[in-house]
Every structure is written in structure tokens, then in C-alpha cells.
Length: 282
Image (cartoon, helix red, strand yellow):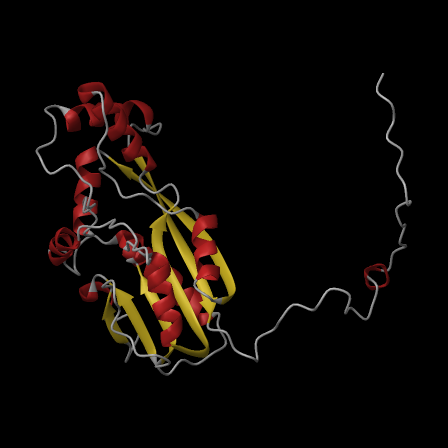
């Protein structure tokens, strides 16, 4: 029997949120992601001739690479097998119900030795807001409801690259702390980037009375800096992988080395004895 992943995202709600995003808005997290991606691509000694950009905000990412094909991040991506030598997954993979499926589709669309590069929020992003909302709702209702998207951890996301079949996988993170005068400014930034609650399991009724007021009080009490500003952390996780190719470097088989490590380091090797005596306990 084939198992399908549980739906993480309410796609119609996510599309409504994204439709309100304006390219001229305050999209600081996307701007940081764009700058980092440009730096990483400049470090790759390769000229790409058939790039594609997978994203949820074409109005923001459509001009990132000249002549790139822009693909909307639907569950089934509009990609042709072996059509591209570079695929960027830009600030959308965190909303995928099946992120491995997205990566597998991207790998199949890459030519041998083609590059996959993804960026998404993850790690401790919005950890402060998550904690304040959770404590406020627990106090008021005695329970919790899904309000902030679960964030993938760096180690887990790196493992997904291997599961998707990429060679030479690398995962790393960059962090940004932002200071706000009030919590409403944080909400406004999230709306500007289309990052409101679009979880499939979210509560559909009105929020409990006083929830957001109490969350604001808790946020100010626990997550303020010395100047009284509210601090919010944003982590961007970057994933890099290559479509397998015969020309790529491969690890040597155990026992195939032609030089002893001690000789290469210019040191003396001291073998361990065959038996080691464990001292008796007092």
C-alpha cells in the first residue's frame, strides 16, 4: 500500500496569503536570502545555461536569474526530466507537505552534475513568538492550537538531501535577529511576506478573547533587549546538492590508501596493544 504524506498546508489559504504580497513591500527575509544565494552561486566555478527557480512568490523571485524558468511550488512541479543544470528552491520548501518529494522531482529535472540549491526559514525561526502564543493560549483555554508552522532543523533537512538522492550534500544556516518596537510590527512583516498561518490543522474559529494581548505581554516580558525592543530570531537554512555524475569525486574504498596516515603527517605511529587491562574497582 502506498502511503501519502499528511497534508501540512492548506494550499488555498497559502495562495491567498501569497497573493497579497507586493514585491515593493518589506521583504527583508527574502532580501537576505537573495543576497546569500548570489554569494553562493558566485563561489561555484560553473556557468549555468538552463536554470529554473521554484518559488511561491514569482513577483519576488521571477527576476532573480536572467532567463530562468520560474516554477510555482505546487505538490507536482512543472519540471521536465533532465531539462536543467541549476534549480533553486526559493523560500517555499518549508510549506511543502512532502519536502523529499519536491527534492526528488528537482533531482530528476537536473542534468548529471547539475546543482540544486534551496533556502527556507527553519531552525529557531519565530521561536519567541511560538513560545509567547503557546503560553498565552494555555493560560486562557488550557490547550494549544497550531498557530506557527513547524520549522525543520538543520540536521534533519540535510538528511533529506541524502534521501532525495543528491550527491555531495551540504546543509548550513545563517541567523538574523530583528528588533521591533511592538509585536504588531512583527505581525505586519509576516503578512507582508505571505507567512501568516496556513496550516491545514489550524483553528478555523476566532481566537480566544485576550489571546494576542496576553501574548504581547509575555513576549515583552521574556524577549526584550536592553532598549526595550522585542527581539525575533530568523534562521535561513541553505541546502546544496548535486545530481549524481560519474565525474564527481568519490570516497576511496577502505584499505585502498597508498600511504600511511602517520607518514603523511610526519609523525610516529604507536599501535595499541592487543589486550588492554581494565583496572579493578576499589
